[in-house]
Figure 1 (spheres, rainbow, N blue to C red):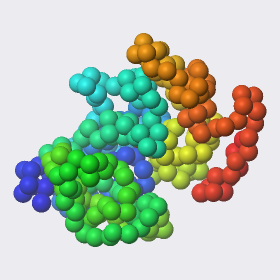
Figure 2 (cartoon, rainbow, N blue to C red):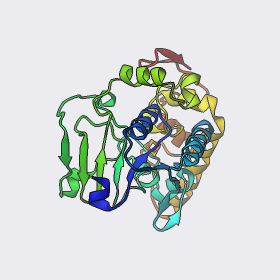
Figure 3 (cartoon, helix red, strand yellow):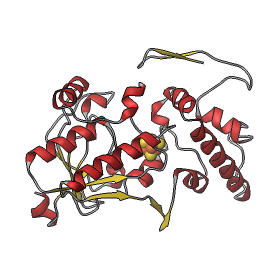
Length: 280
Ligand code: SF4
């Protein structure tokens, strides 16, 4: 289908996570012509960057073409840290502009695969095989890596003129790990460090898990705070006010962003229900 529709091989998107690792292996074993691409988010852990680099080196040795896609915004190279001041708000669960800019730059005019799965969706319904994304812009805002319950095995996106195949859409977590162990597929070392999901450090979708991420990667916390500081300067120049009196400085923006209601200097305890770990 990739060759018929676009005259180019299938493009396997590799985020550096376990689902991508399985897709990579499945496509390799299927024998179809393919290439691989990784979108450099600039906020991934060093382990992810080195892991992808190594997997791509191995694939290239086997003759597979691999690309690292650098993010651009308004025609210029951008990073998470320069994007936040430009957007003038931190990325949140509801305002995930970063994914669109940092992760969605590739695949235009291509047939791609992703590792999205229904098991990662909170609601699991609307299962099916093929979906053509609506031509209505309102209904089309779904991102490549959204684990939405409405995702399908095959999808077509008119806006970005791409087709998407989600080969492990109906795999459970157990299926994924059993396949990885049975086939001895190398995975991102972050899993050995106790990570359940691999994504940008500080991703708002990770909720309270971010406390653990920042404890392990303190330079990222400093980078977010610097970005928030620059964001406040840009907002000031644009004549924008503080949000509900909560964005006084980078530190207060950071606490608001972490959904931390503690007073400065006060410690709080919380339980992450997913990992059953206690953070303070
Ligand atoms: S994974 Fe999270 S932090 Fe990274 S680009 Fe997507 S929404 Fe933003």
